[in-house]
Amino acid sequence: MRYQNAYVTLDTRLYHEQQPTPLDNPRAGHFNTEVAKQLGWLDDEELMARWVEILGGQYVPAEFRPLSMAYAGHQFGQWAGQLGDGRGLLMAQVLDNNDKLQDLHLKGIGLTPYSRMGDGRAVLRSTIREYLCGHALTQLGIPSSNALGFVVSDTKVRRERMEAGAALMRVADSHIRLGHVEWIASFAPDLLGEFTDYMIDTYYPECRDSETPVLAFLQTVVERTARMIADWQLIGFAHGVMNTDNLSITGSTLDFGPFGFMERFNPAWINNHSDHTGRYAYQNQPAIGHWNLNIWLPHFMRLDGVTRETLADCLAPYEATFMQHYQQGLCRKLGLRHSKESLTLAFEWLTLLEDNLLDYSNSFRALLGFVAPNEYPYEQELLAKMTAEFNNEAQHVWQQWSTRYLAALEPLSSEASIEQMRSNNPVYVLRNSVAQRAITAAEQGQFDELNRVFELLANPYNVQDIATALDTMPPAPHAPQMPISCSS
Image (cartoon, rainbow, N blue to C red; front, side, top):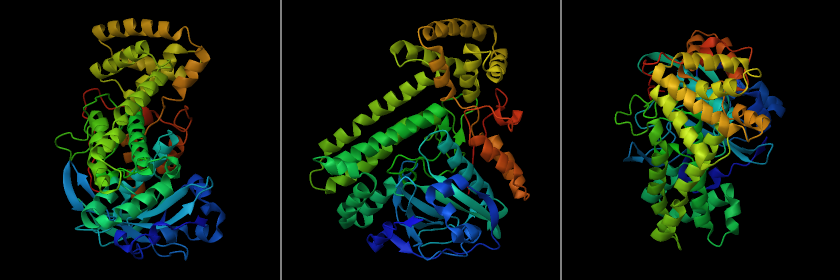
């Protein structure tokens, strides 16, 4: 691999260099060969032969420079003070096959100075959820961290019960969060200029061509964050804990805790059982993204040439960027051109889903069975199941809407519209029930189901023979969608 350990060259107040605390008897859980190939890991005989030891913390290659990062953040809208990598280490930074910097971050590998009251470990169930979700979002085309692999061990970890300890090698284009700047502003303000230069030069070098590189950088972060959250909304993904320390400066999804993928469509859905006020409900994510950036940006007023007015200009494109990306994506999901008329149809469709508690992913995919039933028999079956749930009033609304929808499609190329619908509406998402079945089997030492789900999510836009009916089965219409614990 091509190592480029840049973070360790920064001021030592920003991190703590340390070795991982090994797990007891680590064993292979799953290995992502595509990520290994991307990193160049696959070409290194030593790394391949000793990957379980590396992920288990028993062996640290000479080129690695493990460190835990310091950062801070706002959690559930309140200042939380100093946080940091409490159970993870940035093991190394490398250039991948596309000459893009990637962080190798080992999660669940022991105590750090930032562990607070934690134990520095991760359990198998949360490790599998993060492993599968990073893979799922990546294959759906949404910017996200991914993972090289994970190991399970004999180390016992206490949560609500005693569980098996595990470790995950997360791969991300950056682990710098909005909370890094919050920490610097509170605890080392003299580093802000140096750290801002590092962020620009490392992740946004194109901003150096601007007359005001710092402002160009800030606006680009704002726009990337807006597009990422629009992608979440379009696919029905709820992050669950959008604290400022969980948002990356690169607009890539980071930190998978109580996440969930929408099933029965309910915009007010709360997927985090600790979110008692619904702050991070699905429908609130765009506004929370704006709130977080609004908290983050004023720290840069310490820098020359950055004023409250120029920061307002940096934040101003957020709403327009989000709305444009979301509305264009919504039209693509229906196979329509972006227009006022198309958006009217799209929002009426969402209302139909919400009023009848229809499954979000299945219903969008079912429209292929309506537009091209002979080419898409699986989707035709989905359509039949969907309309079978309609009462008389809903059936009438569907008939009226579908007639207008077909009329809107007619002037367009049917082949182009169908391909647009197929490539924007997945057959498979990581439903909580799908993840839980893989976790239950893995906790019993059986990883075949996890392997199957991993392969299923590798190709989410096509119907697959390895799928079962349970992979796309929504909960009962009025059953509450299972909230997820932050415990991991």
